[in-house]
Image 1 (tube, rainbow, N blue to C red):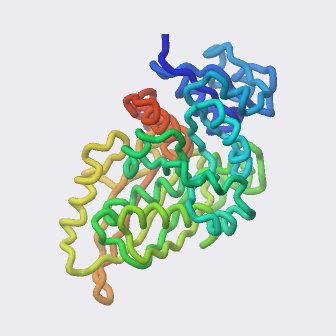
Image 2: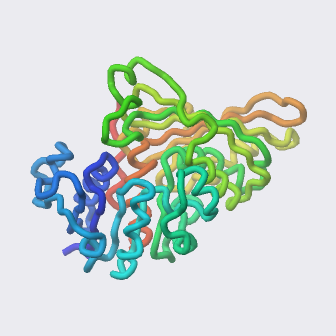
Length: 349
């Protein structure tokens, strides 16, 4: 008998499929309900062929309150500006919440309005959600009831810069380029994810205006960065999964580069899902299909009194950048070992 019961609201997308897969493998949490407006009445395998024969559950069309009733935790796999409307109903049931949308990641309502294109549906609830980056907020997540799981770009960029921010070294401008796979755009086909053009192409989108920018700034400032200004260029790549980020930070030239490099090993030495490879730099194929992130440092030259560092990080956008981190946060909320159902290393190549 498993100790906890979970419901998933919004289970037909790529992220929802990954959450279902992880919960079906979970030793302590039973997936009881999967709610969706698509595939109603059909088995989970109708949307996720890899789950054929793995569960008798079917997609149900339920209100948020119906889905959450009797549950210990509810995971929200809904789009931005949709998820927030369901949160008050779920709170009434007493269930804990892990929200994978962007609706509760920001504390600044004006930033939400600017980057998400409209007023926040429930601004009075923003302060009740913990930002779910375990490497920064682990104890607050454990003590909380509601978690806003980070975005994929945000997770990958933040992990690359967190050791610098925590030591007060990250000051001023950071330039970052993030290359992402098509699954990050969701299950619905679009011009940006259409295979004939995506598979032979590289292009930028939301240049210097991506919605994860304020999330990154808030999080790294909380960690200790000062006067931070992040310039971000997202790049659409011919991958189905994976995020590869290169960030350029400009640190005081008086800092010993060996100390900076050592800071990464020290920060992540005890982290279960962040690796700092010693003999190579991070790469997507090493983390794809897993909840692991890789982070690396390249030391550059001194320019105008500041030394350039290239911080390279890689994740699977659907797992550590999304559903897997959501399950990691769920584990922490429920007082469980955060590694449960997440320790598989993925495949190579």
